[in-house]
Image (cartoon, rainbow, N blue to C red; front, side, top):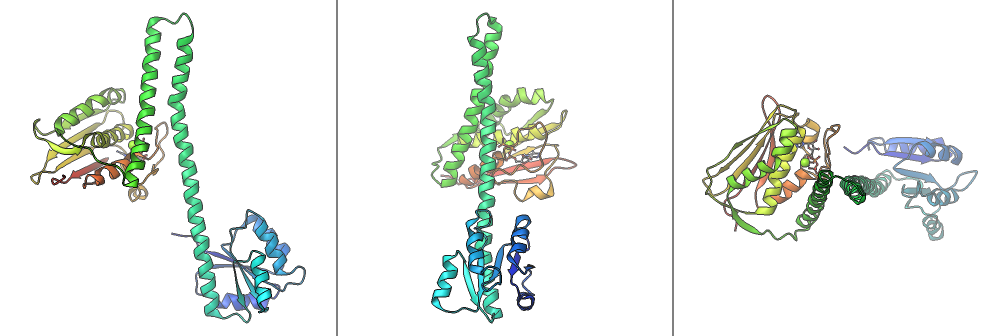
Length: 361
Ligand SMILES: Nc1ncnc2c1ncn2[C@@H]1O[C@H](COP(=O)(O)OP(=O)(O)OP(=O)(O)O)[C@@H](O)[C@H]1O
Ligand SMILES: [Mg+2]
């Protein structure tokens, strides 16, 4: 929920504040009041209002001068200022706007007009806040991705430097080459995922449909994960249909979806646990695939946003969490006309289910 909007009133007359206080009483705002500019600047250093109602006629400095100073400060320039003025000539009003004011209201203040103007300014401020949050999120995400790209890259450079050194034993040479290969494929997977998601999102992804054998595909994915699962002491138990039947999917995208679900299940499962990969064809020609784990499950808070980009839910130490996997799965499965959802496993863990329709053409 959005936070309670804060409206700061700057006016040397306490009576004027009382009037505004009464007129805005039922709007659900938090009202602040200062009677001079010094107080205003002091207050602004520590708290930021969402809208300022500024009296034009003030004793020490006129409101227009204050507005100019206020709007010249990049820290505050985005906060809407409504001038409250007894002056009504076009020149006075244009002076207010020139000074950077966003709106004005004439005295005596009319309640309906005041409420409408404050609401309109708040809409702009809230829009600004939302864009700021989004920009911040993007920045964090770019930093995160760059950070995650740097690790394998650093590994490649480090191994290459070692390989250049004379006297490295053939076994160590082979080991370094293998590490370069692994890091290289990690980079490739990340970059490919980002590019595919961008394409899916823009609606420009053309699915390349092919008939595949679900059992064959799942078995091959399990093979790819065997080593990682073994290292974590996690067992993958397949429950697959007999080989032979086929389903129409974009094989690359679909495989990546299963990769992501299985990778999550292994990543978040405790050592010694079991993961089930279950697939079946449906009578309508579609198919269902489930990845069932006994891991920590998903907190109530994360459930709603689980499939959104860069949502990583509970932060788990020592585990890479970028938050792209499930967003990718959702986009890819929906591009197939199917859907994906999560349920609780009992007594513990998660069940990720994806359903593919049978009438893909
Ligand atoms: N099987 C699972 N058990 C518990 N938590 C999970 C599971 N799958 C996903 N999560 C939670 O959901 C978050 C988002 O998952 P998602 O796959 O989108 O991203 P990620 O695994 O963090 O990073 P990546 O982009 O590498 O996949 C995870 O960070 C984790 O907190
Ligand atoms: Mg993941």
